[in-house]
Length: 112
Length: 111
Image (cartoon, rainbow over all chains, first blue to last red; front, side, top):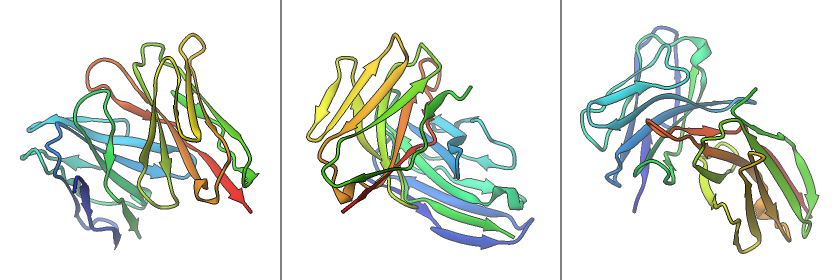
């Protein structure tokens, strides 16, 4: 089954404690992205990757890091989480430009 | 001005009603357009792509007006199961071809 898998689904953490949210896709897609979704703001892109070892900042990259060492994986790293990073996070992949994006099930992160 | 703007709703309609959602986008060079559906706290899923000539998928009809930079979604004979948030999505041209998401329009269909 074609899918994008994120883990964990839910996470409560404390300010400053480094965390990683994993994302994996089994569709051999070139493009992968991370978004955060906050009430009234819609989905905002954090980082994106057009291929292995190629990553770039989206609209709200501050406080986040990513890596793309393999085509299928695109982890999101929060080196020192802060409460303003409390949000619903989605990973997405798509084959190429102009095509449908497939989303992971989301990670609800709370930073206290 | 937001890059993609939608009426946030909510639209509260009875079963069987016809409801229309509108969306405007600011980048005239945008190339591809989509409607996604998002259920509460779930991931967005593609509802339909939007083609220049307009397209229909069962009870759903999407229209694109490039001159006015306007996209619409029409739902006929609404079902309870149509209750969700509908996201208007625009694919920019050039570079990464970023997807720009509207904040969504919430639809609640009641018996």
